[in-house]
Length: 82
Image (cartoon, rainbow, N blue to C red):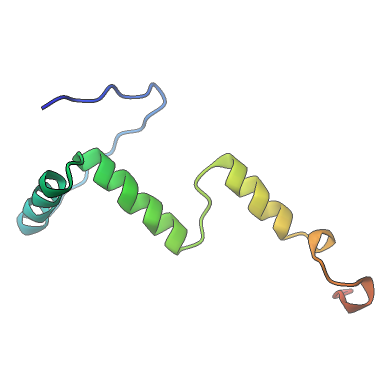
């Protein structure tokens, strides 16, 4: 099995799985033609999106700009003046 080169800024974390989950992941990786790392990246990306968490700095900045009332499309008289 070829191991892809790791990025220099990549982080590693040891995760423990129950044996039946591990076997299911190995089978999914084999059937889909993806590595376990690719499956983990996909799963964690989906999890972050599910909880509306930004993945990149660009997304975080875009979200923070949306939270400012000045960026809302509401007319001035309809805005909350608190």
